[in-house]
Image (tube, rainbow, N blue to C red; front, side, top):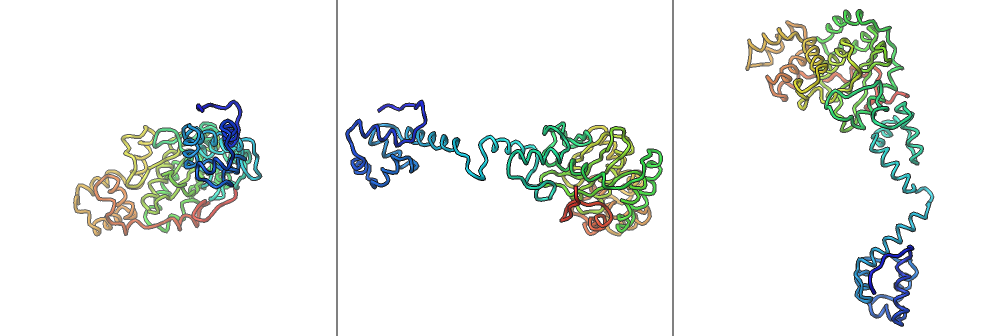
Length: 382
């Protein structure tokens, strides 16, 4: 018997039956030839038993075919049966394919875990919930980006995690009260913000001060794999309602203040909405590799926290012996928290990231007590 491709899909048992009739064999004969129980041969002919590789090998030897022939027949039949069924609680192939696309677009499991969207059983239900969450009529990368936000680092396409985080900020931001934003008032008021960098306890005053300057501050925990540190968004196209969000990915006073200052710089310069990735920490991207707006925000933030000329003079005076005593003395003189000085020295590559970690105090709990927070078990309504 030569191998053939059937015009219609039948179980392998139909072909076995034909071969038995051609040879004048009974089911018992085939059982004896293959050394299989007669009951197994009966189930095979009825299509109630899957053709295993061992069975395919024995059928091929008995009928002079290849084992692959019988495996292909059985696989084709089983797939056809599945295509005809609509089991209760099971997704159709089309639903599975659509769900796969939706999971590629958004980190669905993480969003459900964070209570950003309710769980969904069908592809259609999940699509509707994502459309509502992203506030869009189409689930493509461009239309689903809130505030026309563009990632500022890295510079390729945005990831599902970054896209979802930005949309969550957009959904929560209207719930934060703030004064009317005036660029001149905001620029002048940044001097008051600068006075809060001396003591970690003053972090709790940041949300209220920014709100008085017309800026909504939110704390939204980053999603796994996102490497997000913060973002700046405009709620309206006319740059009238700025929003600053930070993730507190690293619970260190220096990282909080640099991220915040970087996003505040975007507001000051009227930059377009953006999402910042790998902004702080040991793996931060070098400013030289960033777009002009990002380099400008980095430079402004560093100088805002500690005047460049002051830090330059300190480095020239004590390098390479940056002792704890000298850092504390310098911090007292310039009225900047010593952890911020350590962070700036690390950022410039003057000391290793592991040095003076006791100065890098945690401020997340202080901040989340004073600002609208989503994460670490907290989930505001959306």
